[in-house]
Picture 1: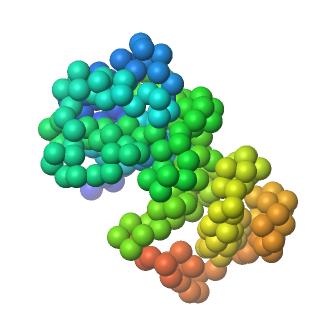
Picture 2: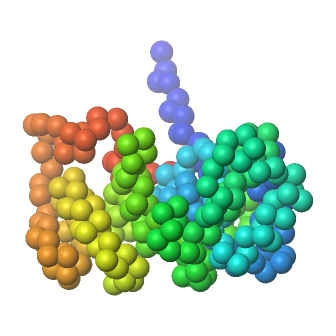
Length: 252
């Protein structure tokens, strides 16, 4: 009997994760926002997927805008057939507008939920570009993405695993001075998440500039040889696959 053919897994792209009907809603909004020259950047799972190169299906799209643009983007979302999600499930409309259509959700975000800051040009004009269906759209910088996720540490939701994955993907090249300026008096949060990262992935942590650790009064990590005799540290936190760097990368 001949050997079975090896079937390579299909490349995962946004085009085969976002169904056409979903993209048509997104495209309606994005094209109008672009045509009206409203500064914006994409965030959420799309930005996380861009930086980590692990894409995941989602029916949500996060659009970051300055607070002065919130009324214009609400009007655009309405013209594209979206309704306010508040009537279905009340939410705090002081920092976000949530539109929905047939299960598709688009969030227009102009501030942090805790009101720590509002979106500014650093969010909307400084990030890289992601390719979606042959078009380029800016995503928020990794530093701002980490900053926004620092405060999501709640009983029913925690974004720190996302931060650990972001640091693993971008840590050696992050603008740490910028991030620390942004975080300001909340620097203990960065210190906490970096302490966890150094414990989970000491060899990758050792690639982050030593000055970062010294500034935060943390011990500079050292490369540690991999061992197979016991559970890895990440598995002590969650045995399910959550550290994306240890999974097969997926192309963006």
